[in-house]
Length: 439
Image (tube, rainbow, N blue to C red; front, side, top):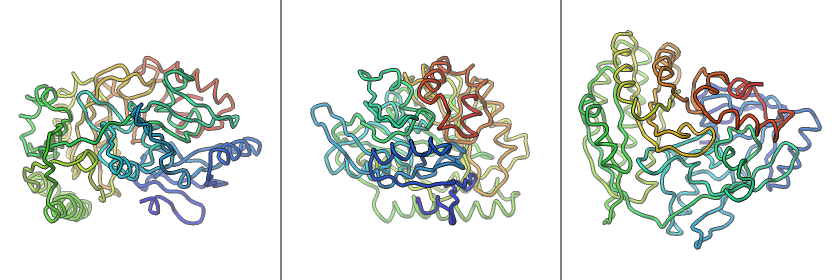
């Protein structure tokens, strides 16, 4: 995946293809000491510093014309502590490698997002999450982290050590320093039974509270221009393991969800008038299925069709109303939307700038096929989400700024004060940081 995220001749491009950067210097440190030395050198040379993961953010969070740090040599598991039930990993480790390595050790994260191409530090720094009634984002599972700050010193943070840095740096946006290692809480590997089934949009909305309350992990996809959704309920299971048969899995996950969907999007991009008809077919293409497997094989799936995404966190109590407004807006707008809208939830957490900080949350994600104009749709959707004091995902398209965030994050000033202390000269600043955190 990373090869597509990286352009040639000194340019860096993200996965969505909507962000481009030309750093003056690139480093690939093989150790924390090397990384710290590179940060000190960049500061002496007057270069701003950004670390980049796999490029899965749609914002220019990692873009820099200064020094770009690539983490691919900082990968692998440092330590497993079976007594404390934690695992410490290097920051550049892709989630895919972490999940496979943990499974080999009979361990698993409690919850995760729906793809695993990202690095652990990229995923946590931007607030990547899955869906969960009781279990929260990947960052909420962090028990400790190691951070190289602007002066090149290495801070270890946990609830006991540098606690105020720990509260913020778990979702630090790359603004407080460069994360070099993360300690996650893990548990013995378990089985999840996934139940995927189509359900009418109105039935999902009228029964949303029950669906949320009765399932450990509930999510659904609504297909604009239709009254149809696909629902997914994941719950812990005593087994036995019953994975999706290989051929069926290939047909549903690769052929229908990626291959045919890709072609449908090409047709829709070329002839937008066909999109509502295609949506009717797409929304009925996947039939109901139930399977039982280890967590990462249930939570995550391949996403090969490129898109651009905006996602907002709204108070869970407001999600049904917000979705009704979104559907009414799409219906009357004349917009042609070929990608489903994804809805997930998370419990309140205690991370300073987490989208679920201090409130029970529901997420609404809108997508557009890469290369189609998305501004009108996203602008109209954003207007609905912000009316509910929505908080945008830090790594996805949005137009909010520091002034807005200071209103919707009660602890916003706590984060910016910490940044003043750790990075007074704004070594880790870029245009995105300036916009979302203020100068």
